[in-house]
Every structure is written in structure tokens, then in C-alpha cells.
Image 1 (spheres, rainbow, N blue to C red):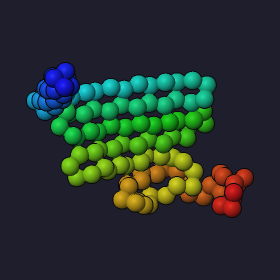
Image 2: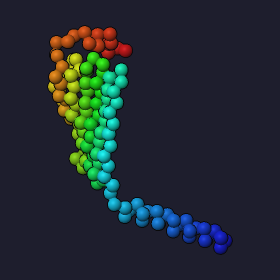
Image 3: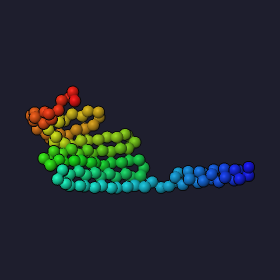
Image 4: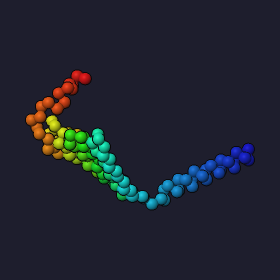
Length: 120
């Protein structure tokens, strides 16, 4: 009985010490990124966090034909907000789902995606 009481007290102390450690730790900002180029195109990602819940960054891909999609984003106390920059054929400057899309694609391009249907 005494052994169980001692083990229970030790576990309670460890849990309390663990919670105290995480509650009093200073926020840690971070900054990372990468860029990769290959025969399949190139892609990148970069992100920064201030350690207090605010994050901003971007990621993107460019295929071998030069078609680009870049996403720039911010996540903070006001939620997640993104802006997409692209030259993908068939895209227009339309902002669905509270996302800003900036397209410089040629709007008259009809054959892109012709092999696909909405029924697939």
C-alpha cells in the first residue's frame, strides 16, 4: 500500500513539473525554407513563425513548360488568408472561398485540360 502511495505521489510530481515546464517556456520563433529544381520543374517553400501564433509563408511549383502556381499565406489571430499567383491556362481573377487569386493566364486557351471531363 505504501509503495503505491509513493509511486502515485512521484507520478503526480512528474506531471506537475512537466506542465510547469511547458507553461513557462519562452516562445520560439522559426524560419525555414527550401528550393528544388529538377527535370520535372521546380518547387519551393518558405515559412516564418514569430513564436506567438503568427505564421507567414509561401510555396510554389513551376512545371517544365513554365506554368506557375504560388501560394502566399498568413495565419494569425485573424485566421488563415491566402493569395494565389498563377499563369495556369483557364484561370481568371476570381476570389473563391475568401482566397485572392491573381492570374495572368491567357483566357482564350481552350485546349488545356480538354482530355478531362467533370464526370470522371
